[in-house]
Image (cartoon, rainbow, N blue to C red):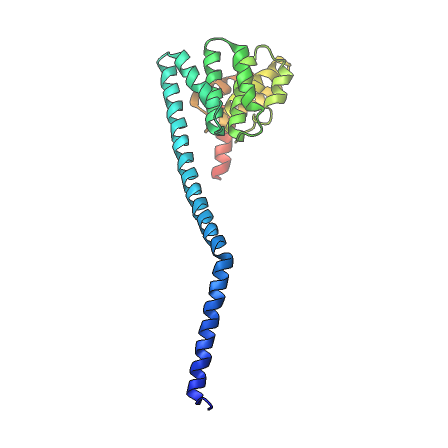
Length: 236
């Protein structure tokens, strides 16, 4: 006895649903555990990343607090306590905190008139290509300052000439040392040019500009008159 069309449609639908159930059952039996494992691993990875980020922030905060405490110790004259904290930061994986700790240790050595020790610490920062350039430039300027009396003038010029240009953040400190080195080499014209540029640079501290103006004047360059002339030309 033949089925009616409607019964055929119902039969086909039931067979199709049963087939899908069998396929899902077979799929789950084969891959179900892998799916669960994948989901677990994904959740673990997400959780681990969140934990890592949190720990990173916590450790950064702890290092910053240690640095602040070390600076407080320095200000209070507790050099031994400060050094212990700074040594801890030097060993940390944070580039910024490590550079700050080394620079502070170098400053402590310089204040104690341990110029060789200070220069060695500054050099660690200046030569470290893994550190940001501002740290390295600062260390280079300070290292040269503590070695200024023992370095040949040309060595000072070669070391700092890239920083002794108007617009550079270290123009004041580097420019003055380079200009003085030119004077030691009996090259007053080059020295006068740097002093004059420093005198006109309004970003520099007033005391430094005043000293540069005097030095430029002693070398025959009226930095004040030049600055006034440049101002008048700019307003025309």
